[in-house]
Length: 52
Image (cartoon, rainbow, N blue to C red; front, side):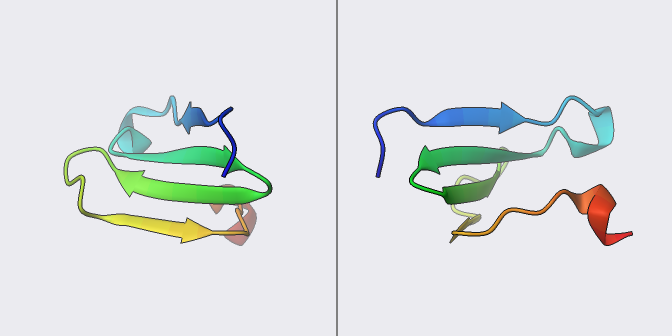
């Protein structure tokens, strides 16, 4: 895990509840800002707009 973690929070009001945290080395954590126990860690990150 990197010490250079960055929070790439969404700016769209409808997406403000969820945020992406880049923890380095191509690893990401997607988390719920209202429920800190709800998170997913992955080595893959996709933009939601790409899935539509």
